[in-house]
Length: 80
Image (cartoon, rainbow, N blue to C red; front, side, top):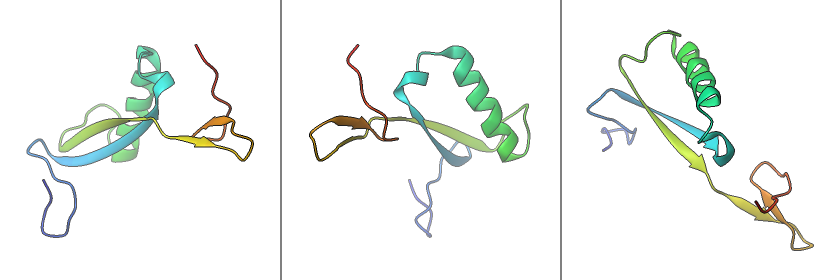
């Protein structure tokens, strides 16, 4: 849903998009730390009232001229 200016809106409050690397998605301590930092930036480190925080997982990759797969931040991607 978007308002008349094309900004994302939500029935829960003002939408805030946070893009995180996939490596953090299953790390609860890291997600708590990220969320705390976002809340501080929004003005209150203890609550998110009025904000609908949406987490997007970064899944973009780049291939260099030699055909090596890189993560979006430029680091080499290793198979797990």
